[in-house]
Length: 262
Picture 1 (cartoon, rainbow, N blue to C red):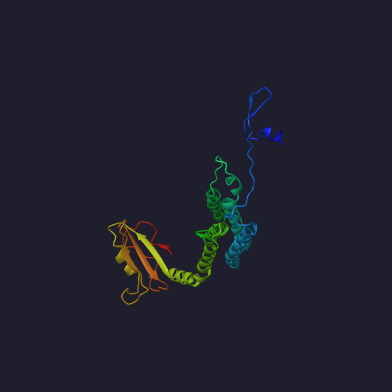
Picture 2 (spheres, rainbow, N blue to C red):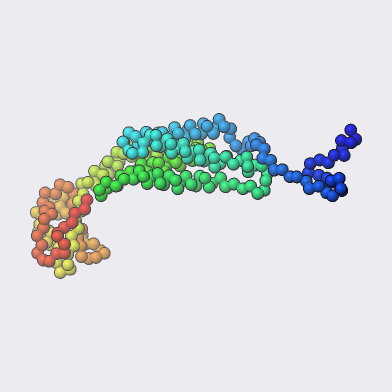
């Protein structure tokens, strides 16, 4: 037993047969150990399922309105964002918790790239049809879906659920208000007429309207633009039977006549 104590332990100073000191060997081993801060695998899987369910609710609303990015697309976006968030928050705990001073990790880097990546996907949902642009609401829905998946992935379950409820309220509950606003906007026409300073455009346009502005609320109202002092802007509620858009000028007028924008 006495001879066993003469062997040097690993890491202690040991000598060779010639009496020279032997270099100790330092082996860095990373041993996985349980960290109470890191959730269990079952908890992380439940987060992925919850993120997919919340994203499916948002995608279902888009699917019912026949949008290009619907049910499956939103689920994939929410699931991918949640998985990236889980990896960013807990995927490097084994290396960071090893105690080695040279190992550093920033858990926000992976999550910050989700915002950049979802911007390209949302840009693909925006389509231009002539003078109008469609897909802005769908692109915003994809952006919110990625945010919900990220929140659920890092454990903010209540925050992700409340955000989903508010988004559904904006997409579904505010739809009647949107129709009311659009109906009011379609009932208004706007005409812009530009002329030289020596032309009395207001008098010229008033002669082309048989309706009296004081008696008929549908008659166009005339106002000068403060910027150029050369153009008139007329607004009228439709229908306005007394308003004739093909006016005849009493003097030189720049352009082909009134321009209409609705």
